[in-house]
Amino acid sequence: MQTSRVRCDEPVTTVFTWQVRPGKEDVFEEWTKGVTRSASRFPGNEGVAWLRPENGHRFHAVLRFCDPERLGAWLTSDERARWHARIDGVATEVSSERQSTTGMETWFDLPGTNGPAPPRWKMALTTFLGAYPFTLLIQWLVAPHTAGWPLPLRAAVFPLVLLPTLTFAVMPFLSRLLRRWLYPSPSSTR
Image (cartoon, rainbow, N blue to C red; front, side, top):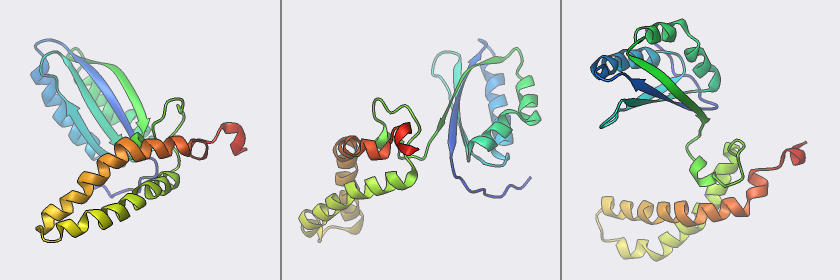
């Protein structure tokens, strides 16, 4: 079965937790390979990762789909139901948690903002506002001193300085500073 790449407008990630009966781990692990192949062929699937316990009987599946509609189609599909029927008595799905993500949410995760992440264009603009001054600073202060270094080493300096600075200082500050713009209250958007 050949699937075409679909456009992702609102990626969604779901984590499923499975409780596996003691002694049935090998059967369950074999099942994970088959259900993963099946899900990977489903339209909109962007990957499945399994987290296996070192000790214990709980397994976690991290399932990523292109959008909530395609994820919903997989979750309610006959194909998935058939795979689940195969492990009756082997494992039980004990929980699931769904979250829409773009990849930049951790820079915009503030206490008291339980709603959805800001629009991507706002996250991109805010990130540019945070990164641009530090890019200039790095180019001005650091780049002249590394001119004689081999290219791979020079290239490593930029992200080694910029990313921790953005992650731990700049983006939390900008997210708080621009909070009302990033997360407008429902009454102000009407």
